[in-house]
Amino acid sequence: MLQPMKVESERKGKIGVGKLDSLEAQCGIRPPNMSGSYRIVGGQEAKKLSWPWMVAVMTRWKEQYCGATLIAPQWVLTAAHCVRKKGRKRKVILKIGELDLGEYEETELTVHPAKDFPHPDFDYATITNDIALIKLKRAVESDKIKFACLPDKRDKVRRKTLCYTIGWGKTKNTLIYGSEKLQEARVPIVNRRRCQSVFNYDITDTQVCAGYKRGGVDSCAGDSGGPLMCSREDNNGVKRWFIYGVTSYGEGCGRKGKYGIYTKVSSYLSWIRNTIENN
Image 1 (cartoon, one colour):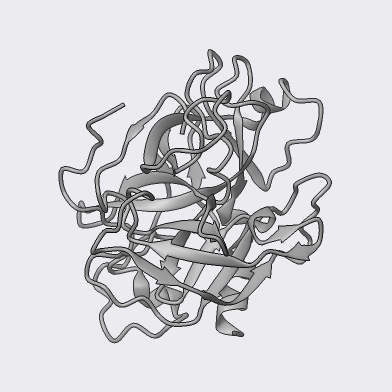
Image 2 (tube, rainbow, N blue to C red):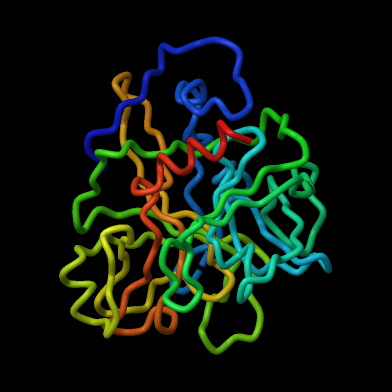
């Protein structure tokens, strides 16, 4: 479980765009009875608006290729490689409140970015500091769409804690295209030492690994930028969901002996807050 999370549910008042602290009272709450009911790799189909902060990142031709997470009315969090390709800016469209990419849904909103902010130290070659913010042209106003909670800088998630990876990525590594419908999969957190032992390159303390040694359950191509969501109860016993990681990369999809690698959000809180407050 996440420790130690602090959610001040008694905070009230008007939500200012970009004022992250004022969102704590309502962030990270999923609608009831939202576990998936069908058959990401090795996961299951999510229910409509079961992850009400999930965002599809699409090309200008409306082809989904990444995910993102709504963390404030006018801000989404994603991976830097989803907004930059070999140093070049990607032109993107965002869809919020989406489940099935192949069907129009009343809850879906198409929003264009006003500006994107890849982390200044993002390295495309090593895929480090793989995190970015996108400011939307307009604030999202919908009672169906919610915001994910940001963790605290001191938060730690114990190894073997089951969290969710979410996205429209490929459900098998051999497929050409990703899933039309949003998928979710539970994956356990893996400690850094064990994760490092199966890769030939450095796993830094700003990254987190999740997955099974046996493989079979994992994020895949098209899931990049989407969230690794972990839950905990606040002081009032309300279960809240926190974006602990941003899907970054891996070797294969659900490959035996390998794990998915995520950017650890708690390592970038100062940058997130400063970027939002200054823009």
